[in-house]
Structures are given as C-alpha cells and as structure tokens.
Length: 288
Ligand SMILES: [Zn+2]
Image 1 (cartoon, rainbow, N blue to C red):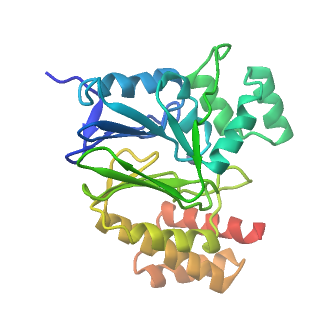
Image 2: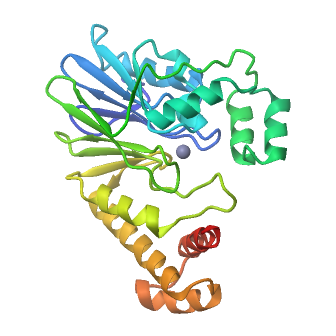
C-alpha cells in the first residue's frame, strides 16, 4: 500500500497538499526521465522532509535534482536547508532571502518586528506554531538567480519558470509544465498581506490574470488551496475578480454603492467571498 502523502496530478507532476494549521503551502515536484524539479522548499525542514520522503518513491536516487523558489515568503523558503541540490530563484527573491538570513528569528525578535510593523502577526504566529524551537534556523540561499525566467529539460518533460509579480509579492514566479498542461501558480494571485488590510490593485492584478489564463493548461495549483483548480474554474474565478475590480474602479471609494450594484453586475447574490474581494480592491484603492 502506498502511504506517500504526495498526490499525482499528471504523468510527471506530483504535489503535496497545504496545511493551514501552520500555513504550510503546496509543494510540487516534476519528475522527468533523468532529472526532478522541486517547486518550493516548504516552511521548515520538517515540512521539506515530508516532500523529500514522498519523492523517494517516485524520483529515482540517480536523478539530478533542482529546487526552484516561487517567492521570498517564509512559508515557501524556510525549508531550504533540507535540500542538497542547486537552488534557483528570481533575483529579488535571492536579495530578500539574503536580508532574511541576517535577521534574528527568536520569539523576542519576531515580537519586536511585529510591534515595529516590519512583520505581520499572522506570519509570526504561524512560524512559532510550525517551528517552536528555532535555535537551529538557517536559510540556505539560492545558488542561481534569474531575471525573467528559466527553462528546465528534465527528460521527456520541461518546466518554464517565469517571473510574473502581482499584489501578493513583487517577486512571484509561476512554474508551467507545458507537456502535462499543469501550472504551479503558488501565491501570485492572492492579495497583498503585508501592507495593512488585504489588498488588490487592478494595475497589478489584471495583467497577471491575462498572463495566467493565457497558459495552455488543464489544472492550476494555488499555493494554499487544498485542491487543484481546473481551467474552467480559474476562468470563472478570475472573471468575477475582474468584474469586481472594474466595478470598484468605476464607482470609487463608496462601499455601500458598490455593494448595492454588484449583484446585477456579477449576476448572482453576494456572498462573503465577494464582499471580501470588494474590500480588498477598496483597500488597494486607498493605498494608491
Ligand atoms: Zn506568499
């Protein structure tokens, strides 16, 4: 019986589901005939080990292995010391990680940074829960940095890593596996969490939506969503997101007027998610 926590979504692509209790994101692996590319390092060496143990069953030991990081957020990079392989990251990801490697990650230092406003409570609390004793915390920095994108040929399957940016993180990258029609979106389409209330800006979000819906893909894996999203579901979601963003842009900072007209625009009654999205676009508007 197979007890591996890894899920297989296509011939070459595997993924480990997220765990919201300590904000563990989705991790991925693309297994070719001679090499394996791992997508994101996880939020601790313990999280990384789950992926590496699962991988032992599907990626032969002689394979060249590579790790690519999708953006600098702690939950995607704090597992790096568990990976004995070359690490690839976008230039800004490498720069921010270099700064992070010099920080004190003790409880007292984290609390101080939350107080100063240079760290957010959510990340502090999740990091403390995931990794209570961080006296051994080290960050392994990327070996190779890139500025626009990278292509890997793993043997019978390729991976394209592309910098896309967005509200969530300006260094966000996606990993596209054209042969299998799979895209690792990681966190690129989520809101900005680090600058006040959750926010979206049309200027960053709309071009990003065009880019990701333009990929010839069947499934998209989000960084913290428990299930892959079909192309049809992504088109539905991003279509609604765009309609809401355009409506907020048109009406301006008048929440009640926005909410009153919105059901007519999206063709359905409002639910909590729609209201959250309105508030995220309003927060983006107020930051401009
Ligand atoms: Zn993130």
